Image (tube, rainbow over all chains, first blue to last red; front, side, top):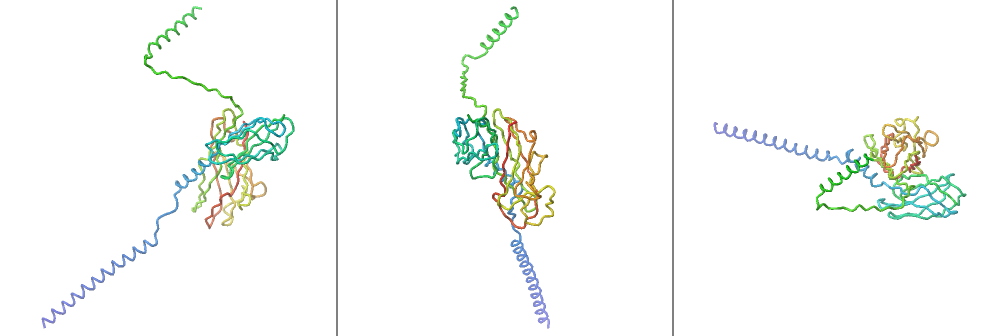
Length: 159
Length: 182
């Protein structure tokens, strides 16, 4: 009788241990599942922060800067220039193009590309201006890059 | 005459003092001056050629802070007299001051664009109506003046509505800066 009681106590003890073991295992498995779910749903921030974005934009502006370098007075004999100069200095990163407009806003000359390190010293207008002094406009920008061009005054004297 | 003598004596004494002060083994340097034909009508101005703008997801905008015009001309002071913007066929438009960007529908490519010195920005107004693909702003002679050898930073402000899709417009607008001499 006592032997049977001992066996029962032993079985009960083993059962309790198994329950405790299974409970502990189940809990730890649950934790692993939770971590896995966490990892799959939470990602590293890939968006660029504001200061980095600002730096990038400013770098684009800096890289795109262009030096406009020309003579503000030009002398022409008829449609052909006697003195005229525009430079695309070496520090400029890209070829430039320029256009000349007369006082009425009509285009009187459009250049081809001028590579960095080169200058133009003579042009022939597509339309001959009358003798005298004309306050014209020179519009210049990079041939392909950028979307900002600049217009400057140029005085053309026709002999 | 007496004064002249005193002055000469003083000059001589200075020369002597200097002569004795300079060590005999002092290195000498030649001063070479090369004179080139002076071209007083040369204009040299450095200008930006693009305005990159980012409309951030949180509704803010990132605009360049180094948009600098540098007048390197030896004699010519200049001023920025006008800015023209034109969207061409890009689909973007400029809004008039009377328009409220908060009330425009989502994904509308219409903006209010202001430019000028920091703290004194002016709207680039549509050439006609309350919304247009092109716009202009005119500045007075002294508003954005850049004397010879000086620089001027331009600031921008953009007001716009919400966008539900990411998009990159390589050339939303073309811009022309018009300068005049002071």
